[in-house]
Image (cartoon, rainbow, N blue to C red):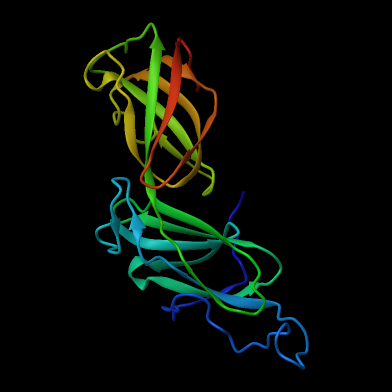
Length: 250
């Protein structure tokens, strides 16, 4: 999927109310003498709180370590705002069926997607709508194993992998081009130790996993098959990956 710019208007004057806000557009279903159905409305998208991987909920951008929030409608960018804005009015939303809103909160330090929420709104005549989202993150547990069942080295053997974010359509890679020594195979021993880290909620694809001796690099074992998985807020998702000796995915 691609993310192309929409011809929508994002207003900074976000509606802070809850529930539906009646617009001044004529509602042909209740008003006599209306010229016809309205063809668009406003959706006020907010992010009043965040759900973190440790099950805590916070309304603080600083506590969630979020600097910027990106808003999309049907995978198309609407706007990017400071987290402190709290929300945005998206006007000219077509009344032509259901629309999916994606809210992605970016990490303050790395500017990568840290938390996310997706919600779908249906048609509601000409009534404007307030949509409160809760961007969240869960924990991925990458449980890799070998035949035989040991890492090649306790000190210079590392796990490299590539994960595809299926919503953002981008790769998250931990390998020679990024941070080659991020994950020591066995975490200092030759016995495999699962890797775990937080990921924004949503669907992903594990595209490859390898054991690599570094410096080198020299591939020792690998699994080049794709595995899909979903991450939900404040939950653990375990992906089991058997690695086969002498397999390289490069």
